[in-house]
Length: 124
Image (cartoon, rainbow, N blue to C red):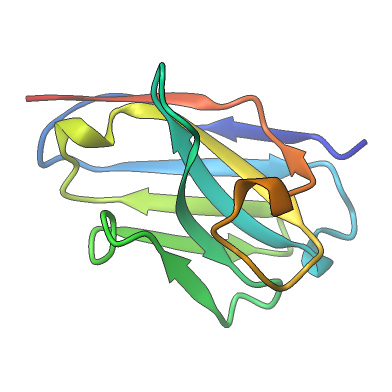
């Protein structure tokens, strides 16, 4: 079972920045496509960003486009989410996930493995 461990969450003021990291235990990390999702209580988990196995392709939800950047370092088995210009509505638990298939990057059920999540709180 692949383990994913997120870190970097916390409390930040609106307009501030955070960088989330997600480290994987899987040595074949480079063959997986990776995604970031977020969830607030009472709502479904929603897509934030995704990156292809090579890092050559990235995808973003409209709500974060231009503010968030996803990247990966296959030598460190880690995926990152740089979040700038944060807004109170970005407050959520953020999860990283990985999958082998190269379609439907924004679809939760297409992902095979998930981390435990890290809380991001943006104060107004």
